[in-house]
Amino acid sequence: MANPQQLTYDDEKAFRALSWTWAKAADTKDWDLLGTICADQVQTLYAGVAPGMTDSVYERDDYVHHFVKAFLGDTDLRSQHLLGAVVFTCQSVDRATGSWQASVRHLLPREDGSIGEWSSGSYIDHMYERVEGTWKLAGVKPHTRLWQTGQATNVMRMRG
Image 1 (cartoon, rainbow, N blue to C red):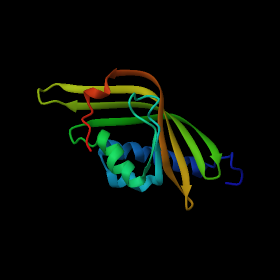
Image 2 (image 1 turned 30 degrees about the horizontal axis):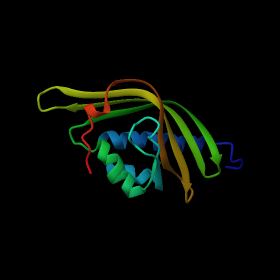
Image 3 (image 1 turned 90 degrees about the horizontal axis):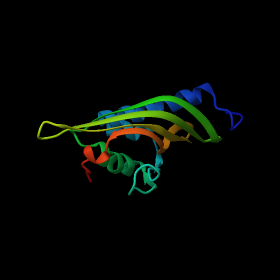
């Protein structure tokens, strides 16, 4: 990348693959796969959309095995994170951001036969960092919730 403000086709292709893999790994609960795409440290910037949460920086393994798994690791929980149109911006030679349209659905079957649901449409930023020549996921920031049905508490049984 000669000009730090100009992304190449290969850069954008790598960003799309990282974000698609992030969604697939979260939805299929493939924590090993998730670990392969993360930078050494991952920012989680959820405070703006999730009351009670704080923005944090996690080491890769803590992000995969504690943060994400605590929210999506319930074996009964089903989710689908759909990422739509995206705009990529470059902050430096080794840092970029993708601002994605997102539609997310969570379903949790309950013992009484009912199903807890939480779905939302929003925007989500994925931060990318080049590590030893390879782009990695370095942060996640959901923002600008457009709509939702249900509540997070309908589907989240926190795991430690």
